[in-house]
Length: 496
Picture 1 (cartoon, rainbow, N blue to C red):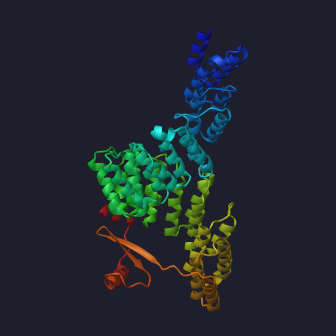
Picture 2 (picture 1 turned 180 degrees about the horizontal axis):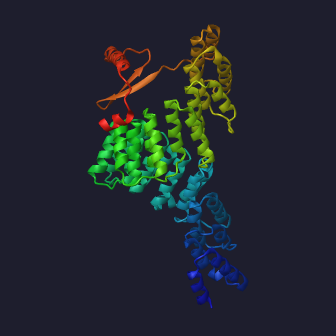
Picture 3 (picture 1 turned 90 degrees about the vertical axis):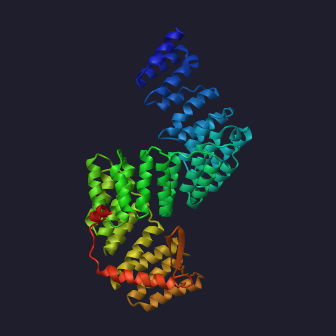
């Protein structure tokens, strides 16, 4: 009889059949003996019923049953269920093993950053059991969890203390640096990886290209792309998207376009990277045209796509289109706006002089606006400074004073607006508040890379070599640029 039931369980193909077998095992008293087989069958289904699977755990199940259920729970839409199951396991007095920790840590990574205390306690337990050193993938999972919680120093400490590493370990460390503003460490880490005798793979170069994109380091990006070609690595979808994103963010939009146009397959991230690249490089109409192509290709947009579209509308002065995209994002595609989208929409309105509408938009936001949104509005007031915007400026100033009382840049912007419209008393008042509060204006700074060296220019500092020559060249360029006619973006791309 047991053999026949086991065969029936093995042949069950639907959740309905599984439920019938579950009911039979319950009523016949065979659940303790055949429950584990049924549990494995549920998990192996294309769309497993994880709630039913959890009910199959007996009051005191063995660790193997927990380990069967943890992987699908950690990857499910509700990773908290995996964390709860782990706590259940510990309450039952069971000690986790090398198969338990990686999946628990994966679930905690998805629950970050609020899961940091549980990540730390899980780390301590792995240390106590000696599993963190014995099994390399436990440490890899620990690094990923700390990184997701915004603790790159803890992630790198785990990496530094590893007695042995794999390529995955190095890639996890690179990703931790990349995701937590330690991008300048990626080059040194990559060099150490190669020196240690490890062969970089596609994931390694995705990290390097992403770091170059965020740093705006074109030579590093070109070098990483060259390494992919030289090592004859397959240009995967993820790798191609990272290269498109890097060239676009580094200002070589024509290179990005060539790569994009030659890719045999593209996903929403590829399309979004190119749309955002066009928008950020002043090619607004090209961004909007590409979005039409994206829709024609039946690719649903994501939050990055709409960020690019709003950026394009802002630069091109397309207020109505910006309103439409913001509305479609939520009501057509079901994408809840993030704070960056609200800030971008304020920029669309404010940059085009619709200051009152922008202010009303911020006041009507369903969430509390952050300082970036208010600063965007203040920047728009500075761009279109007039006596008509005084009331808005004072309200924005009051809000920023509440949110960022020690940020000197806000006072400088307010003082400049009042100066532009001739309200000298108000301008002096803003500067006096700065002085009395011990706040100093941060000097403006810009960087340019020439010949592999980064040259810094600080406002008011003429001590750097060739300063006067550089100023003369900029002045000459400014004069010549005023004589030039605007160039069509597509023609510019094609000519390159």
